Length: 239
Ligand code: F6R
Image (cartoon, rainbow, N blue to C red):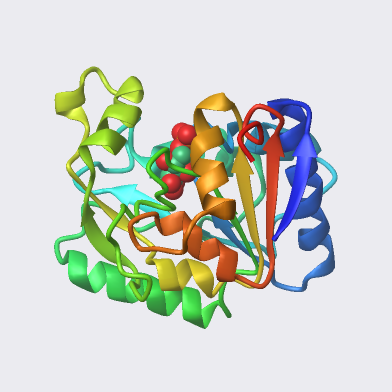
């Protein structure tokens, strides 16, 4: 694991942006794995700032997750988030930008198809990850099998609480989501984990130095061959 220490959230976003754009410029058909939440917002801003000089026409993206029951017009769906914060500002073809469909009639089939699409695209070249306070990556909550593939999950109470800030109240936060599995994430050729702020310091220390255990899903990243952690000083303060 390589750790890049930066001074601020802005620097984290800038550094990650240049790593992602570098990949896009050098690969013929790059496949990006994308995350939502607060952490990658600055990265998406940066990418948009550069969008006049970099084309995304040859890029495919796969998001980590989507809430079950929210359609793409719902401002809290991750599809809406991605359109709003990135896709509508860049020239990526609609058909290349993938998220699980949280309102699919057959959710099992949706998970299965999502796996197939990732496989057919040649797997993710560079996966962006944020870190949950309880060690979740994607929506793989503590206890998720390390051999999990894309699946439907019951969201932890702590995760619903953490995400309630985006909704009117905790009651409006969906109880289920579709997420890439841990094994799916681990098949990415390269992973960039972004961590910012003191609130994540404990979790980051456990990820780096703790036991590799399904009760702290992010600990599996210790076993990936090409992980770079880009974190600010506050997040690194307990390492
Ligand atoms: C979102 C995702 C989640 C978040 C995590 C951290 O697509 O996969 O694992 O990365 O919950 O969220 P923030 O960045 O809001 O602290």
